[in-house]
Length: 213
Ligand SMILES: [Zn+2]
Image (cartoon, rainbow, N blue to C red; front, side, top):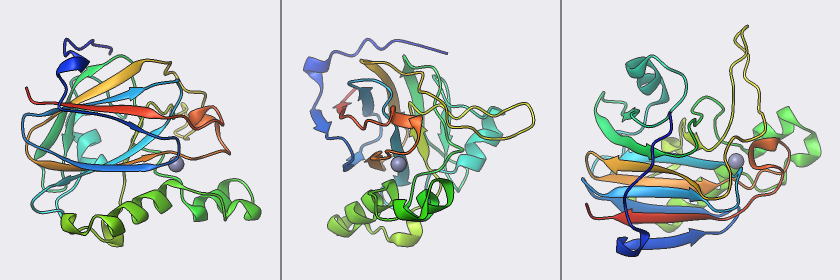
């Protein structure tokens, strides 16, 4: 389901670009709205959310899918935590579908999915681990890197239950917007993957805006 936002980028308190293949981390206060904007189209934005005060409470793909009885995320979806609380709500979405089944790419999954010599290519898990090591105040460690959301990524489930990585359904300028229902830490890897069509084999930058609403 697509839904447009009325928020004006000129009124945003944060307006930054995360380069292709890089991590980005911020705290979003309760009531603030985060927009992730796909600047050039078909980019995958691997994202984790945590309770900013108790990071052992984090986004749960299982609870989110179960609560809404749907595999895909879009406008209206509530992102549920491991404690059953609503962390954020998707309040606008001009892409229409986001994945939470495919997981984040890692050196290990690259060797299993593609080839042994892909092991040394940069991956989302490297970004997550790098970001938490440089941002100690969030209290996150390696064990906190669990299942994530892949914004703008198209991972349809086939009739017999298999997952496939398909060409993206996003386009330049499409965005997803989330309202924080409590203080949350957002950890993004702007996916550097070069081996599957999640980002059209061409990682590109994304724009990140935050509003006080
Ligand atoms: Zn990735």
